[in-house]
Image (cartoon, rainbow, N blue to C red):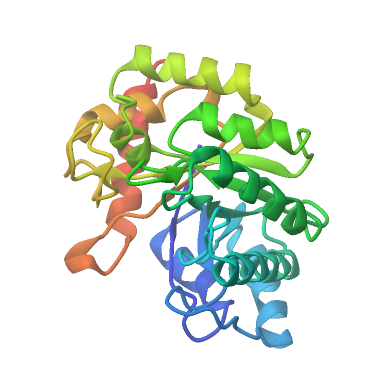
Length: 285
């Protein structure tokens, strides 16, 4: 298993490689634009070229881009809906330019319009976004914590979207340990993780699972609240190893999105803690 983290790309998209190398990570997740505004970043050709060069030098084996949190592919409001589609398409373009393996995104919320209406909006939106996927870049739906009217709180909801898009060859998923716990999957229990993997395999296919988000949880099981905690400092604690150690996950990259020290984000210590936890649970397996 390869370990990395979400890092800042302030100062140029290429600086993300410098940051993850300094942390000792194997893989990296970045925003391709400011997460607080719709306006896309125009990445300079020299920054893109240096990204490719530094990735090779630092032997970074995995790169993913995280889409803007403002995006809502199920939005009933046409203005937000179109902005979300356009922004996600631009994120795919930026990801393709830097040779990213995938773009990870949250489906969004139907905001009370109903699940069926939200699914219809989502599948129509994704059909337009998937037109931009080129080369080896995938589009990965991330499971949600399940608050409010969000879509993607269960494997079944994600599977419905894959099915309605006829199993598009570039549509996959990313599983977040904290979100799974918040939506009722006790990922500290090996039997529950086994059942989760079986469900993913049966409904979506393990070949579509391309990444993990590795986060402890600051809130209880089934709370439907998305609140990340540092590794071993939340309610998952040592039990997070049950999720990490599953055989089906061992070839996947695991990206940390933990708050870090004083909420400054992941650091080298958090990556070391994740590796050490993984080693404890897989030693002798």
